[in-house]
Image: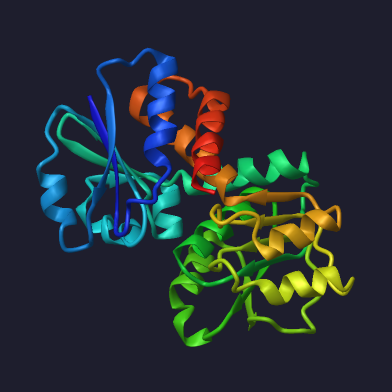
Length: 275
């Protein structure tokens, strides 16, 4: 059976390392997993070329939204978030899933331990597709509302639409607002370096979140993650998110329990080799 990760650019992806490690432990000798460069224009043709030998696809940017109109059906999270990062093939049909959301939830609880029924104030940095998944994740963790710090509120339409579908009120705030109070949970979906202002505030003792998830995994740690760790704040990184969303994908595509620790070891070794 075949599987692959699609995106543009894709050469940096750790997904092949994680999935191949799982196949090895599971004894799936006939399975392969590769990285394929694919943009939005090329996605319809690539999907059309996936025959019965294909188990599924992992999708990264910019394909998580572009794939929606090409699916035969999708799970509820896909509709709520407005993005699918996984396609599974079955009897010629394309089934869409979102494993980013459960991946985020697992990454956060792995770092922070069990959270209270209501994690309290939530601050999400950024307003793109990953921020939409973050909204669904914090709803799953029991949050009743959230604040999203964005640079341009006029570009937050997709985020606000996702919030409406999720039934989670969201307040927009300026990115880098020096008066922003510390949340119980901080999720940064911003690129590496973009959240350095929040790192400075943590180091200066002006801002102490209860828990931090920074979705960047390379380079690691980011300034935000390092400041949080130095201050004793439970901190999860993008590698944990990538690992756990990949584990969910392995289970969807193979029907077997994912060997998470073997995948973790393989991924960390690959990251260490990049440094």
